[in-house]
Length: 417
Image (cartoon, rainbow, N blue to C red):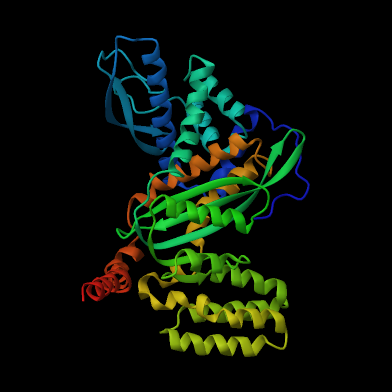
């Protein structure tokens, strides 16, 4: 996504801007559901870090799991896990008094600011100091680094060998380094498991623009971590990426993102023509079957060929990967035609970028924000299977079995004979 053309490196204001920043965050799409999820995540992480600091100074005591507790932050109900110790003398200082579910209004404002608009780790530390949640600088560092460490673990954990789909996309950002801004890229891979759940498989930050060599490393890394069989890979038409995908996952279908195609049309056609082009694409997405869609696609190409011959020539060659989603169940086709699932993370990062002045203030800050965005989804709405996926899951798995497991059975029979 584009960033501000002339980003300023001037520091932001202090706590006087908290209400405006919170209002902006809410206005740009963070509804109560998202706030509830991420607030609970932050409170759980703070409590764990506080217990670690307590146990470091109390060698005779030990951790003893946690218990569920309901709280409220203003009108937002939260369910958190409160860590405890065997000795029973530990209690996180962020909690209200026993049997009280609400904290003072000042604490609510600071939590919301931490969630929505901390521009750096130092700003987060300042907010936590005001909350009185930490007794030392080391404890504050632990809170911030919990998210970064979890992000790094996520990029190295073993993977399930079988996935229904992979969604790939890259997000352009700018990171402050000294007195200048450096371009950087976040490579994101979301997996759709055979159980229907979405999981972030890779979220890697690299300095520089998006490039093919980094995508090779990302995809090879997935294979090294155990991934073997994928039914469908969805990504944009980044130059050279499709052949690499085919070489690493030769039995997978490749779907080129329809939304990226619509964006390209705006740069190759006049405004009114691009509008018509995109209307035809949307109609094509609702086509009854692949044969009907292929006819509509050819009609579209003929309609605009005289206006932009090179553009139409390129997309005509890629008709098959643009229409691969039509080979899958009706209930899930539209979500398989784009990389929009990755936008769930990119959208959160974009809000954080804007609230930070159009750029990220350090590599560490960017990793922290990325870790927050990923954790919010995986502990929030991605914990449940989406209804559209659930409705198509049996069909989707049947296609997987037909392509891979039946083929392996035939190979074994051939070898035995």
